[in-house]
Image (tube, rainbow, N blue to C red):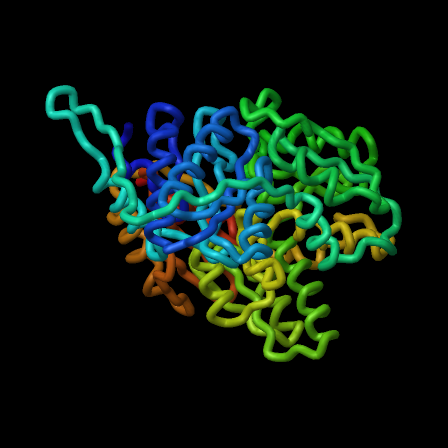
Length: 467
C-alpha cells in the first residue's frame, strides 16, 4: 500500500490498483467517509473500469459497517452520481479515475446536494483517519489498514436503485430540443460512461446519433478517454468530416466533461462553449424575471467569457482553477452557471455540480434552433487568439515564476495578481503561469488581441521559463 499522501489528491482519491490501493483500503475509506461526514445514508456509483465494482463494493461494506445505509446505483457517469446526491439529498462516492489509464482508479466524494469534498472540506480529515488506522510491519515495512468497529453502530442496509432515466429526465427538463431541426451528431464515448448515458439522455430527440466506441471497456482499447489531448479527438474529427455531420461530441472516461468539434472537424474552444451556454442560461433566467445574475469563470478562460457576460447585463466572477473553488464561489454568489477552460461546466440547477451532458444539450439546442453551421454560430464567442496550455518541465517552479514576475511586473499598463499562480494582464494581452501540484511543471496560457502579440508574449515567457 502506498503512502496516502501520494493517493489523496487536492480534490479526490486516485492511484494505481492494486499497487497503491485495493479493496481493504477502499473499505477503510468508506468507514472514514461516514465517520467524518456523520452520514446516516450515502449513495455510491462506479464507472466501467475492471476494478470499479470490487472497490465500490468494499467502500459500501466499510460505510455500512460504520452504520450508514448505502444506496448502490451501479454503473453511472460522475454527473449521474452528482444527480443522485442532489436528488436523494445524500453524500456520495463515485469510483472513477476519469481520463487516467486503465490501471488507475479513484474516488470522487461529495456531501449531500453534491457539495464538494476536497482537502479543505473533509478530504484531509478522511486521510488522517485512515492513516491512524494504518499499521507498518517493522520487519518488512509493509503497510496494512485495519479500522476498529464503530462503538454502538448497527450495520447499515445496502440496497440498489437505478436512477439513469431520472437523470436523463432531469437534464431534458432543463433544455428543450423538441423544436430543433434534425441534426447529425457523432458522439465519441471513448469506451467510457457516455456509452451508458448518451443512449438514454438523447433517445427520441430529433438527432441522428452516430456512436463511436460506445462499448463499455475500462481498458480503453481504441484511445485514451481524455479529449483534452488532441490525439484522442482524431477519430471523432475524421468521422464528422467523413459523414458530413453537424457536430461532434467527445466525452472523457467518467463522462463529466464534454468537448465539441464543429462541422469541419475543428475543435470548439471550451471558452466559446462557456460563453454560449452562459448566454442561454442568462436569457432563460432573465425571462423568468431574475435579476442580479452572476456567472463564474476560472482565470484561464478567454476574456470573451466576461465580455459576453457583461454584455448580457450580468456580473462575471473570476476564480482559481478547480471544481471546489468554482462550486464555493457559485454558492457564495448564487451564480447561475460556471465554466472552466478544461471543459467542466457547472449549473445552479444541477446542484452547482459539473455536467458535460447538460452543456452538450445546450450546444445542440442552440445549433438546432437556427440554420447556421456550428462554426459560424460559435465564431462570435471565439474572439481572441490563444496559446492553449503549454507545459514546461523546470527544476524550481518558484524560482522560474519569480524570474517571469520580475521581467513583466514593471511594464507600463501591466497589472499582476497571484490568485492562482502568476497572472500578468494589460489591455491587449494576458498570461497565466501556474505550477502543477503533482509534477515539476509550469503551465502557461496566453491570450491577446491579435496573433502576433500572442506569439510574442508566449515566446518571451517561455524563454524565461526554460532559460
